Image (cartoon, rainbow, N blue to C red; front, side, top):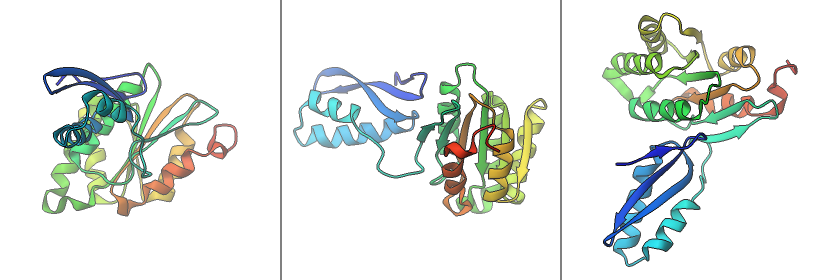
Length: 215
């Protein structure tokens, strides 16, 4: 599929339906929204909706829930990506891809919490994400949680020794670390399982009183 991301990480793709090719540009950040858009288009067109009206509706779609690739630009040009509603290896990969697309030469920080729903595959899943971070070009990784978060941190450091990695105990510690490390112009991704509580961290980071010079 010909999915492209613009400098803000918003996806565009070609919808093939009813014998036509229609270009769709989403106002949502991250390539992972494309599959949802395709599913919605399939249902709508299958029920008789016009292709042009369907693509227009998709282009105007907005997020209605917080913590799902929610982007905030602070006055000091720090961009905070709140994707902390939930996490698994696939959604972590999608979020890192969106972060890379938004980079444009800016420094990037990933605040990643544990993925609590992985069960027996937890350690392997976290090490997999650590390797993804190492290869993604992220400048700073802040892991949040216990043993599985440490497994993520270790894998990232092993695969990219030049990567700055910091371990945080919980959401409040992560906020303190992220505030201390964030500089004007940085892009900060915050993602983890809902139970880790990183929505609080992301929401606080997005507020102007967390700007450099105010701390």
